[in-house]
Length: 332
View (tube, rainbow, N blue to C red):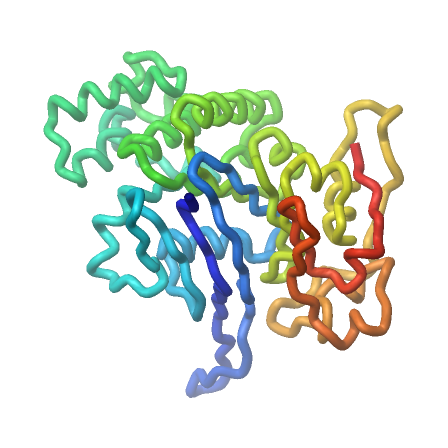
């Protein structure tokens, strides 16, 4: 059963100019994205900065209204609601079922609140009695590997990794059906990143979490995700099981991203792939395939016809006219 189904999601931002602020164009931040997340599954949404992955996450959380498309979410087994169509007044009872882990563990915690109050705040907002809140806070601190004494201290007393553990505890307070993790380790040191990834893996096993993991670092994604969806200029270009995608990428952009992942063993370093040109402008994307100005495998059809996602079997979808004929070598 799917916890989340995103269908043809679009989010366009108007570009206004002149004295009357007339719309003169649109930034197509998200331009027809579709994917699903099954119960207990982690889907990684990856791509370069500016590709639209964080905007997708914000639309799912309804921090931003969508331009068009559907976001079908299951807050309980047998019940499905379209978050894109739900009136704002009806969102509050649904928010407890979708929680977020933020990118910056320093800015995401209120410096004027002690840790116990930070973790208990979603419980308090949702009417959980004080005695139950106190017990739940202790349970959550233990779950994320922090001592009980942490509940009486302020966030400034903790390291970045410890603050992120506090943020994870707060996200799990209400036993959400879906957790959206927006670059949850990108602001941390490499050694601390490993600790937080191991914590998330442990929580996945213990709580059977369903998670959308937004990231740009494919070396992190490999360890935490069941499937990977690769975005480029507002569209998904490849979806595949994690092992299959790393072993044999089928879209040239995915191959480029994987080639950029540093290899710790010099003997395993593959050839470096440097794409031509710059990332396409989402306000004026090129005709045809948005990646064609940078693609080493481009043909005339790529320049005039935009490819759709095609099913290659075994859970893999690719948006490339040459997907069936190309055999791209995996990296690492």
